[in-house]
Length: 144
Image: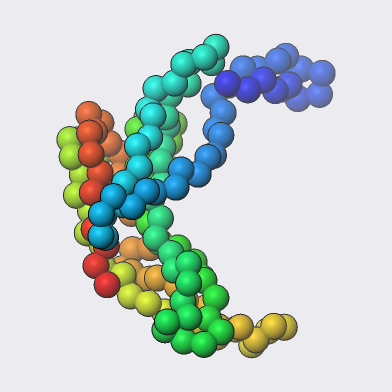
């Protein structure tokens, strides 16, 4: 929760707030990476997880071309409550979620200022969005 003043010298309003944190994936075996994310927290604020984003991006692209830098990431957004999914562009899902988007590498040449080349992943939809309930496991199996 956060507190803010409504208007100039107005009343103090308490409302839900967001804190972004990054949780690194741990390599389990081979191409399997795993992370556990808490959905309900303790402490005085009694927080709950509103949404999570899973992303894929190139970290090191030198095996594809010389002087390539990492570009944009693609991924999946999972909303667990109405606050996170209020724009309405989420597909509803329950139970385990198996996602297999197809991504393609894309090299972009920038000629403005520093003349760099970046390697990004692109797909039919760069961001997939799901409104989930009764979720237990998420399996993201990107194809390239």
